[in-house]
Length: 176
Image (tube, rainbow, N blue to C red; front, side, top):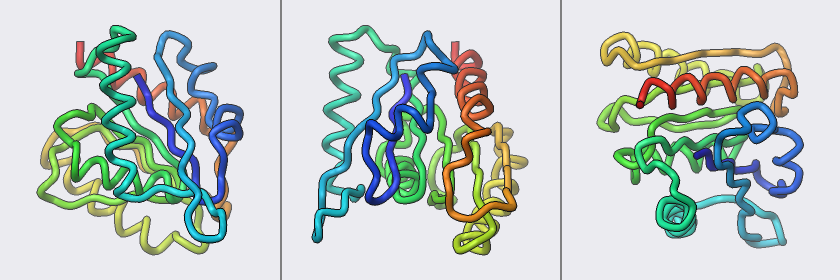
């Protein structure tokens, strides 16, 4: 099962078309969640949404027969940052991550497969440093890690939806 989190100001129905996880991994149960509007009506993600994730995950496991050992999250921009928050707060319940133009990590978190894609501007330097850290952790912990820096800016890469879905699918198969 895959939980997808849109970027700040985004909408779940745009994420369905942009991320296309359900098209590229039709066997997966895929949730495209909608962030709440904050100040000024700008939808985004924050730690308040962890309970929302918990409720969606519980529903999937208890009512849709989803395998709790094969839960993946992916996000773009602030959605990717929220996925990083989930890694820190719910890492034992998540099997892998896909970060696009965002993300977070701390060395104390459990090793998990990670796909990290980012553009050069404006977040390139911060995410390059995150990529270097995750690369070192991956080598030490034997965790799957794909780093894909792009020459584009802070956009969702339409040409990576298949690669992201395949990474998550391969990671799920290894957990069987």
